[in-house]
Image (cartoon, rainbow, N blue to C red; front, side):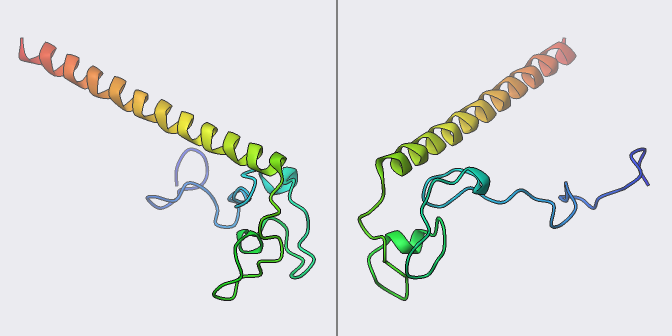
Length: 108
């Protein structure tokens, strides 16, 4: 047992079921902030299938009816995600630089 009172197996960072709900597939916002309307046909909110052409069993009721607010929110979601990936890459570069500097010092 760890000093925190619980020891998770490798790769497990939280209690199963405690993970946050994923962002909406349509607007990219978390469920409590989702701006998508309820689909009149299937009564789902934020389902990508409602916004696709009717094909392969998807609902399709809201095809072509994505609002500008939904498009903007999703674009902001993509920008935040790209920024986070850039920050992660920068951190990795800094980490590698520190290893390189440490290795050079050890070689002297």
